[in-house]
Length: 600
Image (tube, rainbow, N blue to C red; front, side):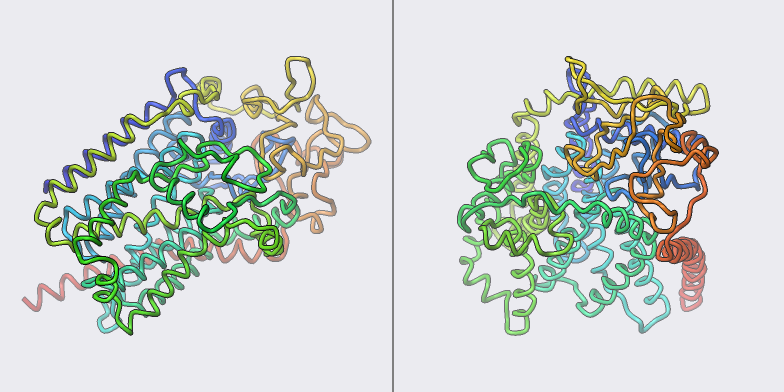
């Protein structure tokens, strides 16, 4: 009971520490909320007009009109958006921060208890370390809201690693339930904007499985895990099929392979860099001297992975107290375990390979599909976070001396981690510039009114000299019923290098000029061939009624590609299958309970 109570206390402390940045002392938010908060308001506008079951495939609020669901980074299907239906966007962000902190902690706690078979104190240690990982909280603080689903990683691993059996009917139902839960979490991660981290998160899950197989007393069914892993992936693809196909269509029309791919020169320097960001986070990282081939300035938040030095000290103590790494290796790894060790080591080398820089290796990476479209791979360091946490928990659990004083060791470690977080240098986050007040005010005004504004005009942000500029908070134009032409949208490049302006201009949205309206037809970004246009084309004058529906936050008619039509059907079937399975599972559980009573 004490570890459980301490766990809830840690979650409360975590929220109290980080909620002070929503907003910070100056009343401001992280800079990337200039992207996310208007998106949440835009989603609320759609909800008001179309209800809960209609998805906004396009939005008139940004860039003169663009795809929404097809954008891998958008998150209409997310708790932050759902909370915004009930309260304002800022409250939605706060509630998401608290909810996923709790899910991350208890997911890791249960993973260690049920799969790695550790005691409650070691599980508390693991849950607390993972809760305070620097990636989650500081990324949400700076505005990378899509990173919140990373906290589902231990929950996914727990679901997939629980043992199941086909020997009994109830065993089959339990295994199917766990697989579906993992699939739902994977699908949520993708639908809520975490597309860039899906692959490294899945790699982390496989490494967790390998570590569990290597751990004496670990409860792992390897073949069952592989079956559940593949099955969950297939179901998640079905549940996300519509967004996935649409995203691939969007990305296919706007490749971003012209950006440089940064890295660290020298293996030793790279290992030192990764250890630094995992132990102390981004506060002391000198990116200019350590990182080569960087096209963009990388802020401190890009290197926030910190777990503090505490887990590394525990791992070192565990090795020393158990006779050093050679004795631990000889005890744990037998001949049958070598394939699992090789798998873990190979996957652990992936972030090293992707973040190592040499001109020749960089040229090879830039030829790999999808890889070449990313601007950096430092985010893949997340693979190491759960691994370090698990090894620290096992160091306590498998060391007789540390186990005898486990409450003291775990308590001291968690106090250290909390203190490090509480007294960290937060000047970078205290000075974040985005003012959420206009969006929050617009939300409540719209809620009272009951209807959203019509996007009746296109505008372009200007600097102090009156020249077009990529100013702060430019996406806030939607609160005035305007669409920002010079929008903040990374899909079109960090400097809008890839946005096809094609005659879009400040002025009324339905202004007629040379047979076209002053608003883009967003279907042309996804399905140009089917709709007889090219990406960036405008609505034609003959399509004025469709344009009016679009700018009023209503669906409008357009033609889908064949692949999109198939994906939509698959997605619908999978969504309908989830409640049907839940109903069947409930009936099976009731039948099994009655059967057990009959046996007694």
